[in-house]
Length: 133
Image 1 (cartoon, rainbow, N blue to C red):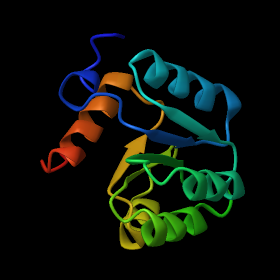
Image 2 (image 1 turned 45 degrees about the vertical axis):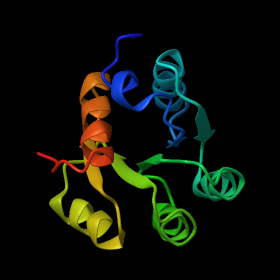
Image 3 (image 1 turned 90 degrees about the horizontal axis):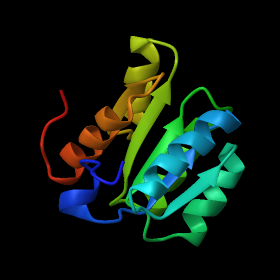
Image 4 (image 1 turned 120 degrees about the horizontal axis):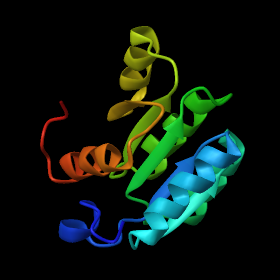
């Protein structure tokens, strides 16, 4: 993973993984750490808000939108880290949920199971101002 597309042009982007499923959270966090990124983890909305408050340099927030109170995380991040990009993650392919997430300020929506290279490409596109596909 050292040649991940996320590492080359942007260096170690600080990332918050807010994911309720422990295995998914740990796996995604380890992939990003292995690629040279500083990663914070949160198993729930309250922990995510605490991490946002402690880490003003976060650039990317990956948020499980099936997590209870996920909306409060988006609202808090928008108010406290307006320059951060928020990516919603869900195993449910619901256009209603995706539209609600976008309305609240989520920049992109990823369907699980995630493909790490696709996640990296999405983040690169957001950070370089390119449109998402």
